[in-house]
Image (cartoon, rainbow, N blue to C red):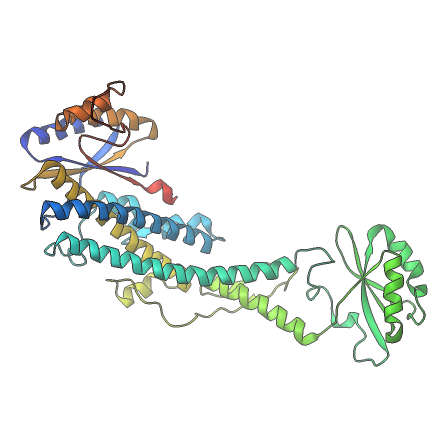
Length: 427
């Protein structure tokens, strides 16, 4: 399971023995895999400051978790053509998330422990806020690009009445640069093909004989050309409408068609480039630009590396990747690492508030083996550590017991310090 419980208990002899009992029971019953979770010694400050910091860290924890979920979703969206490879791009410091959590070590260089706890929390807050601000601007630009492309693609997927015709018609289908003649496009229902062939020349005077040709069709009808004199065009449109033939307003403009095709090619190129900067081929058989290849080159200036990561290292990791995916990978790692540091900070602060001074506690990371065992694991922990808070433990172990003046949510209160890390939310 990609779920972890981060707990702490006082570091005195009695509670270290309780931790040993917990390890023995959970191991024999195959409930969880347990490891020590190292947390450095911080400058405690005053208890009042710890109470305020406890609230702030709770909010920061929620913010960090929300941010990494959004970043993971952005990776999924950018890698829409390679979703099977998403997890291998969601790493922390170059390793998978589970390995990072189980082998966590406090980053002394990035978050010095000699500074006050409030200073450490402030550094984490500023780091995550900057990442969120960058994420918003980058994903907004990508969403604009994606929506523009979707709008163009919709024009190529509608019926003959609404879709673009630039990828259907050819220059040879029209009489161009004529002072007297014009070629119209007419949509004819499938059941009326025969009627059209018999009557189109007589719908108006001055229709060029044998000038009609079927150039495209969908499930409802076909698109026919017809050539006639310009001066009878309005009369022809009226007669065609009376016979349930629809003249599609279209003027063949080679420059406009070229511009529309180039715009689609550019958007496809730009969107793909955010994922990969190599030469990519558009899908063959596409009704729009068949067998067309786009040479993709990097956009803009090199990305700002994440804090603490050298340019050379970032470039070697991101070789062959587009700028958005590369940024997401680097900064997802930074945000996830920050999140686990926040969890460690919360364990320290809550342990001092719960168990008092001097600082003496042991943090343990538990990884439940399966979802069905979590209830039993919770019962074991509550039983082993019930001496830490006899009143609360009694309420937890027996939900039917009502204790005057004590209001507890039995699912949320524990006699020991407890925090939850759920990596399944990132799958």
